[in-house]
Every structure is written in structure tokens, then in C-alpha cells.
Length: 178
Length: 178
DNA sequence: GTTCACATGTAAGTTGTTACATGATTGT
DNA sequence: ACAATCATGTAACAACTTACATGTGAAC
Image (cartoon, each protein chain N blue to C red):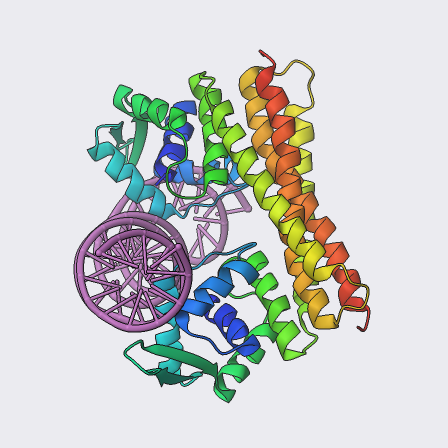
């Protein structure tokens, strides 16, 4: 459900049509998330019904219709509420990235708490994976099948290490008062 | 749809009940994927209908019912077909990890091609991200908002670098004849 | 006797994907 | 004229999540 908050963030940066949003989305959030245009149109419709967005229909000259969506105060409040709220459902790592982008446009400073929560979580998981690695894959004479299983575990370990490196980098950034 | 192939792989390693599968799944594939028990029961039912699995119903003594699923030849053939077939829909990175596990149990040696295909893809993406970084975030006087946007891009860059490190590690493994 | 792990399922709702459908503007 | 890009939507389906529902066996 945080696709809505990703869209709110994008729309606060600049009011846009669904089409324009889909394109910008691929460039600004595309590093970690893709949304199809159908998803975007559906969510825009819902958020307009909730009163989070204003729709301005343009019939610019001829027949080409465009709908420009702009975030209303209720939408901004919803985004503020969501950025400050910890966890929630769905992928928390992705949600954190959206929260950082949202902070950039809202000017708040609350995402650091969520970052710390996820750091603890990832650290625990990494420790677990390393224990499994030591226990099951530290022998010198592993079979080919075992080495393949090890490779799958390695992906998990390297992914956690990489995430934690990024998290430290980002934590330094949040501590500075820019 | 490759949840089916993940389950086939697990069941080839050991025939199990849906419940047992759900638990083992969290430990063997849990590094990159979680499946709820409802998903598992549904897919087991479908695969049994397809004739990929045999179901042995146990009414062990009293009333406790268990269904033990075992992979039939048709299921093994399907897994063989899928492992060799490139790409397909869904997350290709996750699918590769399942393919590696499947190779461990099938004894095939075809996943290397898919690994190379994904390496090329990830390399291209990483280059693109680095270009964006240089173009938009190499100045010394970035605002706080810009630095947050940079952090989001950094996650993408570090994730790609980490994936490629893993891929090189894994490629060496596949080249050795274990 | 009550909690925990085992074990399986239905139902409803949300989200995501794929296919189909339409029409205008811009550039060649 | 024709293709590409802009622009929006419906419909059907597939996948996934959450809640509800049930019952056994073992341990404490």
C-alpha cells in the first residue's frame, strides 16, 4: 500500500499526469521499484476519491485530454503520518527508501529511527546466516551440490553486508545537519 | 509462477507435507524468499492436478491427517525444462537462485548461461547508475534533500556491486568441475 | 487442563500483470 | 502517409495477504 506514498512524494516534487508520473517513477524510484501504468492510474483514482489529490482536467486546444494531479493538504498530512509511523506491512527496506525521498520533499527528520530499527534487524539476520555458513559449509571437501547451496546462502550474506554498508553511509548523512 | 519450481526442488530433496515444506522453505530459500502456507497448499494442489506430484494421505493411527507429496517423473521433467529455459516472467535474480538449488538436486549444468545473461544486465544497469551519480550528485555543495536522493541512488549502486561480486564468486564455482 | 507445535484448509480482499482498446500530436 | 510518443482507460486474470476456522498429539 505504500505505492500511494511513493506517488504522493513524486507529486509533491511536481504535479503531473499519470503518464508523466509513470515515466518519472522509473527514473527516480526505478532503482528499487517499478510500477505499471495501470497500477498508477488506479491508485491516483483512489487517492483523488480520498481527497488527497486535486485533479485538473486539461483539454488543451484540440481533443487531447490530460489530468494533472496535485497533492492537497490532506494528502500531505497522510504522507507526514506515514513517514513517522514505523514498520507497517510490505517490504520495509523499500519503504525506507520511499521515506527518505519523502523526507527530502517534506523536510522532516524522522526516518533515522526506522533506519536504526532495520539496521538491528539486518544485523541479526546476517549473524544467523554466518552461523549457518560456519556450521554447514566450512568443510574443505564439499560436494558440488553443497557448493551450490552455499552459493545461495552467500547471496544472502553479501546482500546483508551490502545493505549494512549502505545503512552506515546513510546514517552518517542523517546525523550531519545539512 | 516459479514458486512451483522452488517447491519441486524442495520436494525432490525430500518428500514432505505442506506444513513441513513451509518450515524447510523458510530455512533453505528463506534467504531470498518467503512463501505463506496458503500459497504452498494452493500450488501443491495444482501441481498434484497437473500430475507432477503424487499425494500419499496418511491417517496415522488416530485422526491426524497428513498429506505427503512426492515428485513424479512429469514433475522432474518440468523442473528440468524450466532450469534450462532462460528468463521467463517474474524476478530473474530470485529465479536464478532457485535454478542453482534445482541444479544441485538434478545434477544438470545449464544455469551458467542464465548467470552470464544476468551479469550483462546488471553491469549495464550499474554503469547507468554511476553515470547518473556523476551527473547529478558529484558537486560538493549538495542540499540536504539532494543528499537524501543520492542515498536512494547509492542503495541501487551498492546493491548492483554486491550482486556482481556474488556473481563472479559463483561463476568461479560453476567453472570448476566439482 | 492448557499451551505449543503439527497440520490443513476456506473466504475475502488487495495488489499486480496482461491483454485489449482508443485517440491525439509530433516528426520524418 | 506512417511511425513513435503522449495519454488514458477497461476487463480479466493471477498472485498474494489476512482473517477465519478446525482439529490432533505431546509436553508441562
